[in-house]
Length: 211
Image 1 (cartoon, one colour):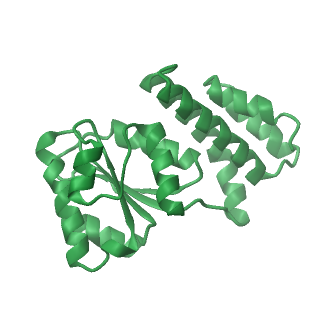
Image 2 (cartoon, helix red, strand yellow):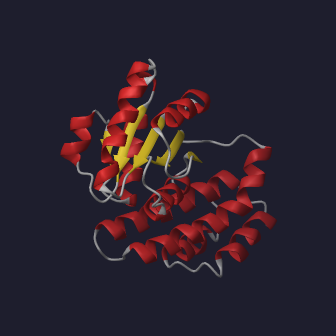
């Protein structure tokens, strides 16, 4: 193991975004294994998710932690692309039609990327037919949808119905989230998983991939 791996992990856990690039670049210069660095950074991000779930930190701190992780990943990605990148799975994320809120979605994306998933961000205000079109084109393992407004929650159900009508629903897992969404509603509309917050969304994604 790279001798300064603990320093890199602590930089993420302590949200030292001004130091992470120096530490990761030093590791690269010392020929540390990029995948080993990624795995260690994922462990650090998992700890941040646990801290959030225990209310030891809050959304702003978790976002800084995710940004810190991303700075390190940005240095490692070119090296991983040159070799064989070990992905945990592919996830397509979007906010459904009628909703332009994206802070929560973006935080979940950073957490998922930090956990080793390949994530495609489709953006906000996405109509159901466009979501289905992208699912067919991207062929993800998971489709993640969020809604912050109660008025846009039915659009999630419309997407799931359209996936069924287009014959692709059984090819992917669907996870949902957002302030007005809960486990009972997610089950009612036919979603496979529900993430109460960004940290839990990562765990749900892992469970769905391994299901």
